Amino acid sequence: MNANIGETITTMTRCVCEAAVEVFACYGVIVRPVNAASHAAVSLEPASVRAVIGYDGSGVRGALVVMAPRSAVKCWALQARFAEEIGVHEIVAELANIIMGRLKGRLLLEGFPLLMWTATPSSGMPTHLVEAQRASALANLVGPGGHFAMRLDAMFDKSFALLPYAARHSAPAAGEVLFL
Amino acid sequence: MRAADPRILVIDDSMMVRTLVGRVLAEAGFSVVEAKDGLEGIQKLGDAKDIRLIVCDVNMPRMNGLDFLERLATMASAPSVVMLTTEGQYDLIRRAKALGAKGWIIKPIKPDLLIATVKKLAVQAA
View 1 (tube, rainbow over the protein chains, first blue to last red):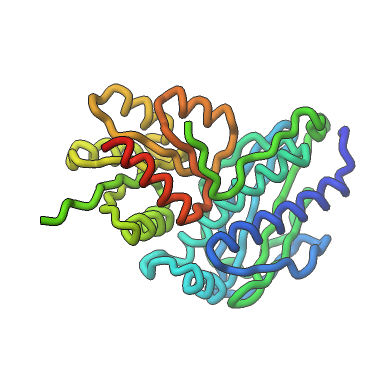
View 2 (view 1 turned 90 degrees about the horizontal axis):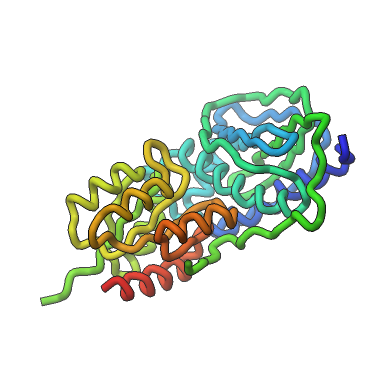
């Protein structure tokens, strides 16, 4: 494997935090990272919601998990002025989808060969996300309504290697408009 | 008699996106019609003949945004389309352009830019 996995996980964690802060800010919700823990088990209060989005890349695949207390999601909804009929599960699922999009652009720029993701988020009410049996980048964040977490799990093939610098291209910015 | 507000068709499988974009456009003086995927978008185009512009997601079930563009290309006098998506891959953008899309907006939206874009393309289409 032609990559330092420890450095890669550090990069993944930073990108997850940056993508989350950016996306939430676009909706007028201010969140910030609390700490970048190396362990990957997450526990939240029983009344939580979750979204999981799988992804695939060259030599790597995994999933992004977003977990938040229902009370926190309701605070986000109030600040972002989401319509009342939109449920907490829909909010977390869509936020996870958009965060994944922004995360992909950041990871590609770092040479992480993420090609596509499966936008089939699920939601539920877990109390505990077990430690993954593979590499994980855990981002603990805090915003209105309290703490929440995002974890980017990755399984690397032996063939995994970061993209060469010449192949790394920046993605369009959030909200950017391209006239075709 | 006041002229009718320009009508915009918003196609996205996320209700959150449809309601958010719909609210932004309604507050800017547009009339909004919603569809949750490309197939429903085709149906809504058949029901409402005065749609000025379409704002369309890319990744949707049943019929995605690019397939929707292909279907639209077979229809006479179809409205212009601007894509609204998390995707930023330039090969997708090139493909959408080749299929006739007039714009590509990266989610999450910036309301002012969305409104300016829709106004620009809706006026061009008028």
